[in-house]
Length: 180
Image (tube, rainbow, N blue to C red; front, side, top):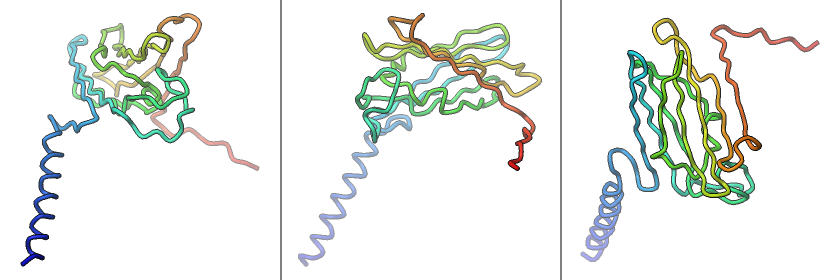
């Protein structure tokens, strides 16, 4: 009889743990994560952005570099970024958002631009503040739109401290030179 009580207690404890985990899940977002959704009309089409900010992410190397933190593990990072334009999901490489820390998700904004749109994100605090602009382009009716460029600037020294990445994707394989 004592064995069945012990099994019942263990089952009850595990069930309560599972239920408390479910209670911390809100709209598919678990505790420690923050989901932000933005929609904006760009021309005749709708652009949607879904960003997932991870609080207290795993930190294997505090010296690794992130925008918004300085030689310490960041308290949050941008964990995923999903962009859809006119129903087409755009490829956004992790290099476009993976080093953005202390993200203020409520600052994510979409701005229409000639031939596409920009996605702006802000983060950091005081001397570690930054703002990023991701540019997307392509003719949505004829081709798959894509990310064109990313610029991240320091919040206080935007003309002196910045980083730019340009993206070019080939639709056909690029010949790789052979080693001789």
